Amino acid sequence: MLPTRGYAAKTRAAKLEPFNFERRQPGPHDVLIKIAYCGVCHSDIHQVNNDWGIATYPMVPGHEIVGKVVQVGADVKKFKVGDVAGVGCFVDSCRTCANCKESEEQLCDKGPSFTYASTEQDGKTPTFGGYSSQIVVDENYALKVSPKLNLANVAPLLCAGITTYSPLRQHKVGKGQRVGIIGLGGLGHMGVKLAASMGADVTVFSTSKSKEQDALRLGAHHFVVTKDPKNLEALANQFDFILDTVAAPHDPNMYLNLIRRDGVMVIVGVPDKPLEVQPFSLIFKRRRLAGSLIGGIRETQEMLDYCAEKNITADVEVIPIQKIQEAFERTIKSDVRYRFVIDMNTL
Ligand code: NAP
Ligand code: ZN
Ligand code: ZN
Image 1 (spheres, rainbow, N blue to C red):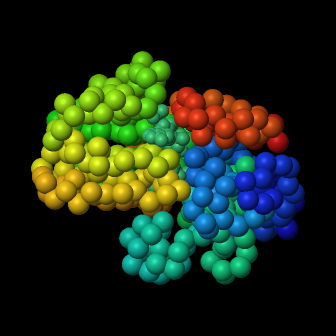
Image 2 (cartoon, helix red, strand yellow):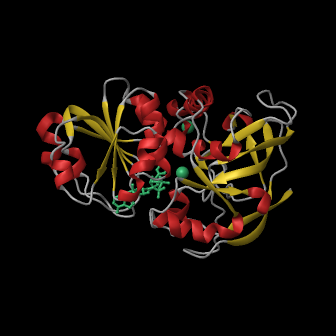
């Protein structure tokens, strides 16, 4: 076994503290990655606090992982020692169900092995995430990362990037379409960059007036402060596609009403309480409401290659691991510009 250092929450809502654990020796199909950076996703905070009722402890969070491959198993084809690799929200899946076969592993019928607070496919070995020194993962569940981009800024693509890229692609967002992004946080700011790069006319819906200049700099064309409902009324029935990235309870109806006939709102944010949808918000204008979960390995690789080609990465604040609690608190207050990323050398 490989002794590994990390930071863990030992119990629900506990402060993260140093935690030593073991990873498996790399098997024939595994790569060992020395973690350079790991992004701080709001899901990490939900999970530490058990907002969704599915947490397990001790929990080493982190699923926006990038680093260097330092060892490869005998049968590994995709990587060699020295390559830059990424790991996102899952590290394995059944590989035999229809979803796995179509590279939608995140939707595996048996349930994927999530990167942390989950189990390996044996159903019992716990998984530990990227707030740690190293990770062992099957090469088929690791991503190739261009060494051309700044690694700290690439890390958030592994969750925030793919979670916004996938629904934009699924719903064929492109030139001439009006797109709304609700919430300018980690996911939201990637949604803005990606939607703008695809040619859409992008509006940010935000509770934070102070983020207006940033939104425009990130590529948005319009910025709407949502605290005053009047700002939204004037925009009724205009949007082709709206992405809801909000992490806290909120009213989805005020945004649904902005969608034109047959348009769609995709929910990716997962607040700790259910959202209340008024049937009328959907019935009038025949609107659609959908969800989306990260993305599969094939699409994640496609997104990474797309971002490398277009020079798209996240805006980050790099922190030492010792500042993780402060980063959690600032993220909860919507005070993140726009993703905290842990420099794992500080571990
Ligand atoms: P984040 O960085 O905290 O961003 C969320 C943003 O939502 C905030 O910055 C804020 O933006 C806005 N917001 C916060 N409270 C609000 C409220 N009460 N009403 C309206 N807007 C509010 O979080 P994140 O990392 O982007 O994650 C967002 C959500 O997506 C989380 O629930 C996370 O668990 C979930 N998630 C889902 C997937 C998936 O696959 N579906 C993947 C990753 C994360 P403004 O200041 O602009 O208002
Ligand atoms: Zn995430
Ligand atoms: Zn499967």
